[in-house]
Length: 515
Ligand code: AHR
Image (cartoon, rainbow, N blue to C red; front, side, top):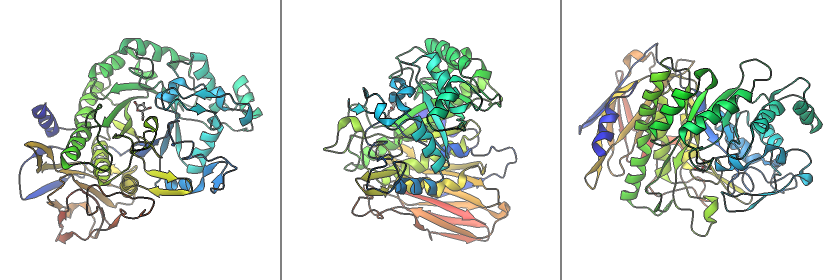
């Protein structure tokens, strides 16, 4: 297993990453006209009706004392706008295949309740529904990504949802929307056709799901005929390559906008380990699982290339992130966990992988946005804090819609108990104004790493840097010390006549900007 993993790291589309124990890692950046643009949607998020993500997270209701706009917390809106979140996936997750959207429209007091079967068996009163979510996306200036119900819903129901949200003419669903107070359609572009169809979405085989997908997709029209909707298939569970093969083979490419792969970084599904109280061995295992993303996108991408050499179909990683045991004393069904420097390193290295595969990976959604799994925001009643992962997403936002500068380098190794991982992770891009951004992660928990980058031919002279690090890998932002981990100026580099000599401390994330 280990050997295969290492060999796969050697060849990727745009970065030749090999391994060597060298004093200094030489990173080469290629200014390649043919390189892809990093789709901003790689920096997307996910909000499910799960635990305190929506209720008690985003949504407190308009009678709450917590400052809000139509029930959505103003502090969360401000923090996410600052993060420039490009898209938000909703309402699930597993919840999506139990969700009947018509339960969540019309006067709130008349909406039926259901039981949230997957997440704690709590009562869902449907007070946050389609209007609430899509209006919130407008406030956030972000693109909504709706996950349709295939598992327990009907073709008619999903077709109606598209008509309800997207049709401006006269029709039963647009009339209903208008009756509920919204004249103009929202024009939702991204539509998931089911979620985890291989599991909570219906335990389907790949062949059966491909048939279901074709049927649902047929009736989901772009009601305005503007080519405006992207239909997204429920993709594989991590390394289930057969799933991708069957979907690519059986779904006509003109019906398939993208395939959404899911992969969580987990030590062991039966023993996930604590979110804060973890050892270096556990950190290593988490990173081993997280860095598997390189192999996953490479292998799923190779299968997609066979059927779609022009790369018209996008790969999405529409659920990713670290998954640990829930915080002690919290509801096991609510998936609330802390977020430490481990999560910052995990986020930085994973986003570098997505950037480097921007030719095929065109959307990703961190699971999840608020109070669930690897959240960027945590709330405790009126208090709200941003996590180390938030800060990584923030300093990486410079890559959104920038042109990839493919990187190649030989990574030194990070060794724990005789097992190894690449210690250095990197990606780079050039934005519309010609500024260069290089993001570097030192995965090694103990040793600093020296990196050298020749930037002479990039047309930039002055570099500045930002770093996210802390004294301990287990450090986190608490409600009492909310700013323990924040980006600070990074001075650990010198520009020696166009050669950047960088020393990056253990478990840290750095972004260099050249102008
Ligand atoms: O993000 C939590 C859950 O993980 C989602 O509901 C599901 O799609 C996945 O298994």
